[in-house]
Length: 129
Image 1 (cartoon, rainbow, N blue to C red):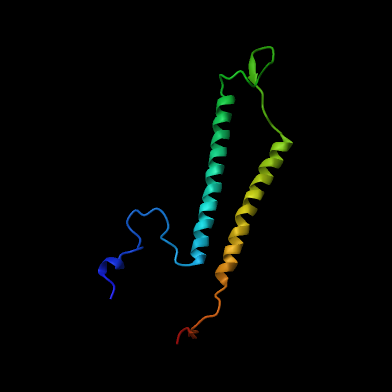
Image 2: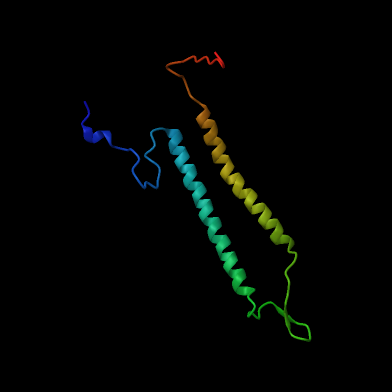
C-alpha cells in the first residue's frame, strides 16, 4: 500500500497558475501549444503597445512633427490612406493565424487517434424509457 504522503503528489493546489504535470503525450502537446500561443500574444501585445504610445507621442497636440502651415496657423496633417500599411496589417495577422492553426490541427488529429483499445464498452441510451 502506498504511503499517504504519495497520495497528494501532482494534485492541483490553491492559486496554481500553470498546468499540472502531463500524463500523456497529448497533454504535453496541449501545454506546448499553449506556450506557443502565449508567446504570440505577448509579441502582439508588445508591438501594439509600442505603436499606440508612438502614435500618442508623435501626434500629440504640442508636437511639431506633423504640422503644416496654412497661412493662419499650424494645423495637423491627417493621415488617410497608406496602401502598404493596409496590406501589412492584413497579411501579418493571416500569417499568425496560420502559424497557430497548423500545430493546433496536428494536435487535434493526434487527439482523435485512440490506437488499439483494450476494452470496448457498448452504451445504449433510451429517451423517455
